[in-house]
Image (tube, rainbow, N blue to C red; front, side, top):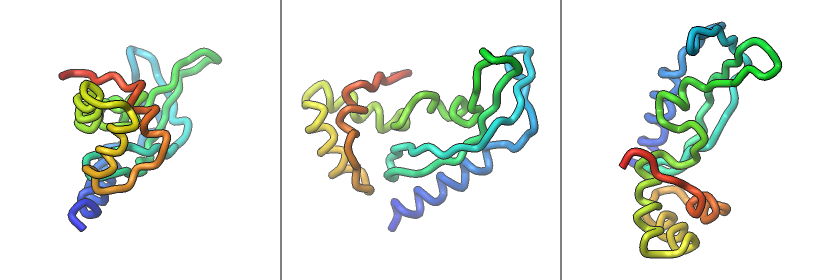
Length: 127
């Protein structure tokens, strides 16, 4: 029950942090709101689905940016940094499948495959 409360609270907090704006400025260039999209994140409370706003600059090769992902350190990630660190420590001693099983037992939410592949290719940042 506490894990469920944690997932709900984190999801609501992230909704509040994803500021709705028709455009944002990135590196001196204007990027316009493009779409909202959902992404699953694996947190210490289990998996959550995060709705995030994506912005894109003008022109065919202009990059897209998701400010919420950047603010949370989740750009290009599935696991939050704390879960990623647990997986990395596990990978020092176990195989990716064993780490996946360990996280499935440790985290309050059942994991689905291909978590072992995700763990095998994750690179912890900042620790």
